[in-house]
Length: 97
Image (tube, rainbow, N blue to C red; front, top):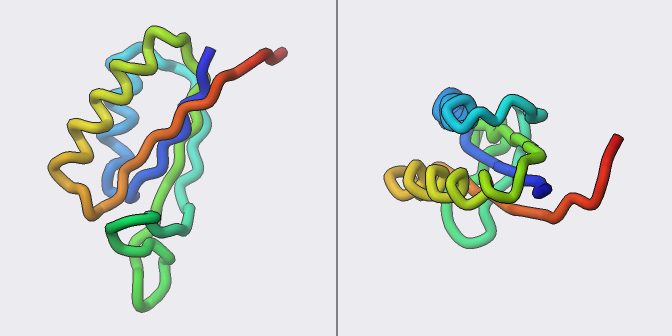
């Protein structure tokens, strides 16, 4: 099992949920108002007067076989809007109840 943590400009929310639905990835946790800025490019998302947009985040625990296809779809979505901020990180999951 893997944990995929996705951070995104709030504008990507619907597309990301659609991707997860089409991959039959039912389980995930989502935070709708997350502040941050990219480490190399893109604009900050602070939800204030200077930087009014916000980020969101999704954490999905999934089978290993689903990870690469998900990352490919996220990368394709990101390529058209690189300055908006869309990133995914993967961690190994050792167990749960």
